[in-house]
Image 1 (cartoon, rainbow, N blue to C red):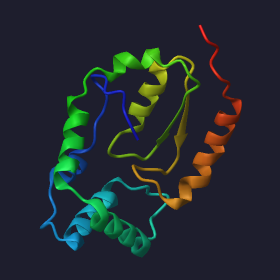
Image 2: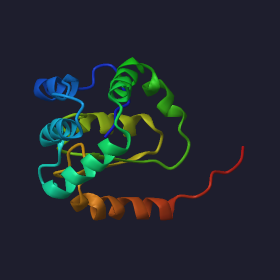
Image 3: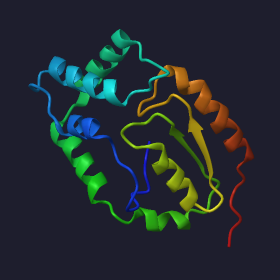
Image 4: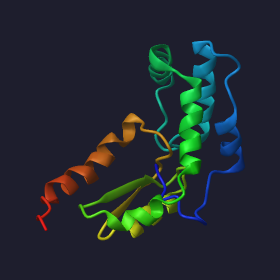
Length: 159
């Protein structure tokens, strides 16, 4: 669900871009949750639909606990302002597994592939049907890649 930020990589569709910069009707928790659900309708995993009542409650709990509209804006600005992380990725020296949803409409899968290509020896895995969310249906798929990766990783040798 990330990108190297390198110039020329694809971005979200216009519909997703518009949704990401819109604001909720109000700061009432219910309006914030409705707005967030609309965004996840656009960016979520088509092959792994969320349990809507449980997801709504999860979002409501989060909004009631710690929602800060300015924080959301700052995160988007930080992503847009970071222009050189792609030049730093070749410095990564640990075993790296990059996984990315093949159906991610916010950060297209080409961005994940680019990240893996910039890290020496990195392995890339695409998760079919996964968008820009973490539905319970993909947990086992992710674990099937992560656990062997962790088991195979060895401690780096001191220089």
